[in-house]
Picture 1 (tube, rainbow, N blue to C red):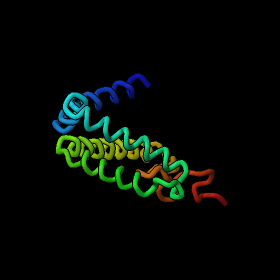
Picture 2 (picture 1 turned 45 degrees about the vertical axis):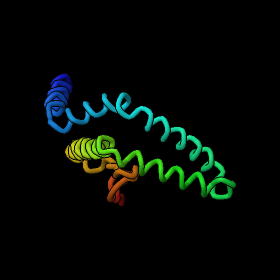
Picture 3 (picture 1 turned 120 degrees about the horizontal axis):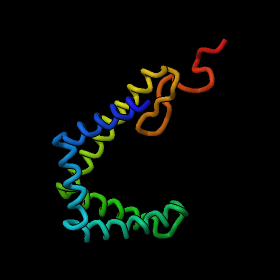
Length: 133
């Protein structure tokens, strides 16, 4: 088991040397200092939006708040560094999920594999995994 953990640490150390991972870390560290005001404005609007969503489309300010939230999100994601940050975030998440899915498949094809929406993909998982009876 110790050998397996050592291999995992070696893999992660190697992964951390990739250029796009380093770029992701750099952007992550700079985000608050460079765009703190924009992020705070967006989070304020998002909090209001979340409150309105609790009531739903029957809230008297639903349409107005929804438009403000959409506009704030578009404004925030139009900043190149923030846009790049989320592109790298999705890339890293996708690669790590692929690695975990390969490990799952190697251990047993009956281990549930979740897609990006959190649903079990294919016929995997469950009590019998389609192999009952």
